[in-house]
Amino acid sequence: MKTYGQLAFVYDRLMDHIDFSAFVAFVLAAAQRFGWKGQHILDLACGTGNITLELLKKGYDVWGLDISEDMLAVADEKLFRCGYTPRLICQDMRDLEVPGEFHLITCAFDSLNYLVEEEDLNSVFGNVFKTLSSQGFFLFDLNSLYKFENILGEETYTFVDDDICYIWQNYYDSEEQIADIQLDIFLKKQGADYIRFQEYHQERYFSIETVKRLLKQNNLELLAVYGDQEFIAPKVNTERLFFVTQKKSDGFSI
Image 1 (cartoon, rainbow, N blue to C red):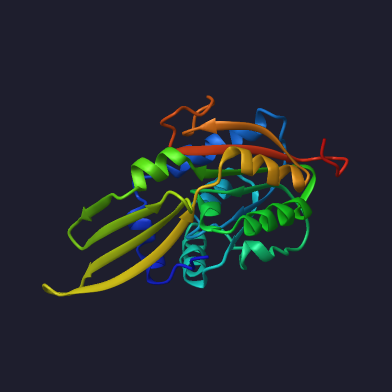
Image 2 (image 1 turned 30 degrees about the vertical axis):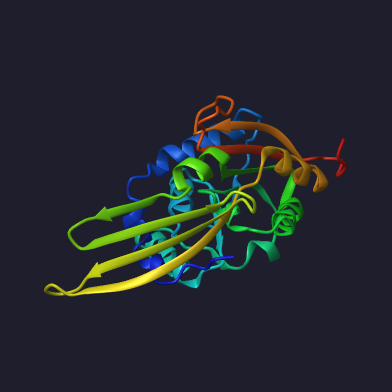
């Protein structure tokens, strides 16, 4: 599983096209459609704290968890600067063990696709079950097969700004259903000099059927699957799948 290094300190620049407020509004609305009224939230794979911050702005009691110390360092500074007391945990979500229980757990922006072994995804689901309060909700998203095959695939993307540019190269193994992603990032120093660093990532596609099976094994009930941040069923060209799940009160799957 990838832990962000130098990328942590430019991550927000590369994600500035995302409307995090709208994303959080959708996630909360999805939970509330099924009766969620909680207060305590755990943001898994919180990264630089963008989702955590938006939830705090709405008055929720939020903890953030991430495997990367560098990402959490950025999140800590950001939350403190915005007037909040950061409550951040550096931990691998495959070994999730936090104090107390949470009414809602989120995991955003295909973070679970970074678990390239099915047993790791199964471990996370089991840990989520133990961490949720009775009737608690778990909302997460995954990249779709369409995105792996057509958006990642064999594509190369570039981005150029005044002081930063990157080259993003992808290779998708259709048999293993794993995408290899290489980022070459150039940061401008004083004058005409640039600093170059590389990041290598892997993501795995998980089908809805596989996710549903693993959720059931861990007593998490799948309530809905939405496509591309809308309250509609996934389409053939859906890029991001949103899952709404709930901890079963009796602890047994049916």
